[in-house]
Length: 116
Image (tube, rainbow, N blue to C red; front, top):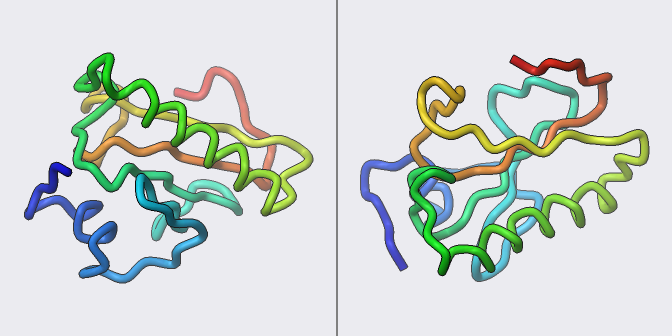
């Protein structure tokens, strides 16, 4: 499994930086964002270091599906019955600030469109 020693999310996945974890399995980890943009704001990250969605390959399809499935399961666990938003930012212009693929799970307030 790929790991980047200078990546904060790799360090969180490895347990060397603490996080308020909501879910963990062998493929991914979900934790509360330290700078929340909504009352509920979790990040679902793969344990494997992938820079962004733009860097994924066909063999990453199952992992990507797993990340979204975990986000959906968390929405049930956290009783986000009024809805939620799942977001993947890719690259600087896409708003990505940590170069490790992650899904934002946002809820607890009305989301607006367009989001940017």
